Image 1 (cartoon, each protein chain N blue to C red):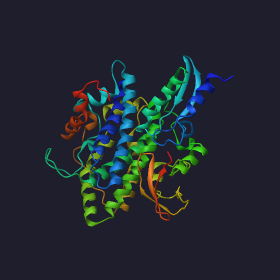
Image 2: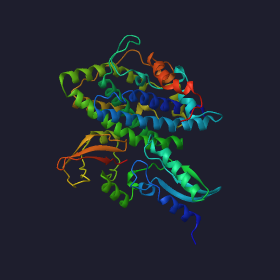
Image 3: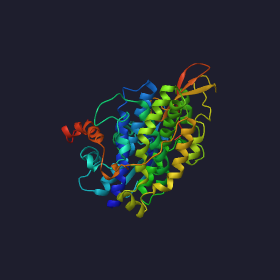
Image 4: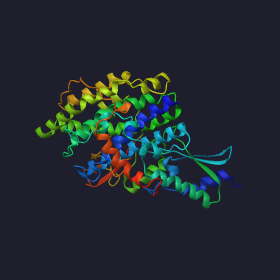
Length: 166
Length: 260
C-alpha cells in the first residue's frame, strides 16, 4: 500500500526546474522533505539563489501538483541549512551535461574570504559539455542567470554555461 | 525587538538600494556580458533584501509587509550606507546629471562586497537564527559579486591610461564614504549588545587586506581618508537617495496593492 508520503514524492518527482527543464526539483536538491507535521502533510522546499526568479514558479508548481494529485499538504520554505550545489544528484549532473551545461564542481573547502579572493579565479578547469575538452576559458562570471558563468571552449569553439558551485 | 528590526532594516536597505542602483545598467551596460552580470548581482541583492524585509515584517507584525517597507518608507527612514545611493559617476554639484561611469560602479561594488563577504560570514553566528540563515545564503552570493568587481577593478587599474585614471578617480571619490562602515550607529551598537549584530570593526583588518591586495594588483593608490563621516545608516542621506526612491517607489505608490 502506498503511503501519502510516497504518493506525494511520486507526484512531485515529475516537477522540473522552470529554467532548466531537464533536471527535476528533487535532483536539484530543492525538494528537501515530505513529512507528517502537526497539521497534516508538509512539503519542505529550499530556495537556491536569494533572488532566483524561478523560485516563485517552483513553489506554485509544487502547490498545484499536490492539489491536482489530491494530496492536501502545506508547502514550507526553509532557508537553513542553505542550499548547496553539492546536493545535486549525480544523475542530475549528468542530465545537465547532456543538456549543454557544465555541471558544478564540488564546493571547495570553505576558506575565509581573504584567502578565497586571493586565489586565482580560474583555478579549476571546467570541461566543455559538448566535446569534453579541458581547454576552456571563462568569458564572464555571470551567464544567463546568476547561478551560471559563461565559458568558451577553445577546441570546439562553442560557448557554454557552467553551473557555479554554490 | 526594535534592536533587531533596526539592524535588519540597515542590512536590507543596503541590499535594496545597491540592487536598484546596479539595475540602472540593465539595458545600458558597457558590454552585453556586464549588462547581464550587473542584472544578476542586482537580483541577488534584491533577493537578500526581500528575505530581510520579510523577517522584519514578521517581527513587527500587524499589517507590515515587505512591500510596505520597500515602497512606502521615505528617505529619512532608509538606513543604508550613503556610499550605496550615490550615482554612477564622479562628484558633480547638486543633482547635476553626468554620463554614467562604469568604474564608479565597479569600485563601489568592490568596496561594499569586500565588507559584506566578511560581514555575512560573521553573521552566520548571529543570535537571531533567521538572520544567521539569510547570512549563510548571502555569503555564497557576495563572494561571486566580490570576485566579479575585483577582476574588473584590476582590469581597469592595470589597463589603459584612460581606464586607470577613471578607476583612480572613482576610488578617490568613493573611498571617504567607507568611513561610515566603521562608525557604529546606535542601532548597530544595540544589535551588537543583543548578540544579533556583528562589530564591523573586528572585520576591518581583513577588509584592509582584501582592499590593499586588490589595489596593489590594480596599480591603484589607496586614498587617504578623513573629513566628514556620512550618516546614511542613521537616516541622514545625500540628495541622491530621494531621486532613486522616487523612481523605485512611484509605481507601487501610484497603484497601491497592485499585483501583476
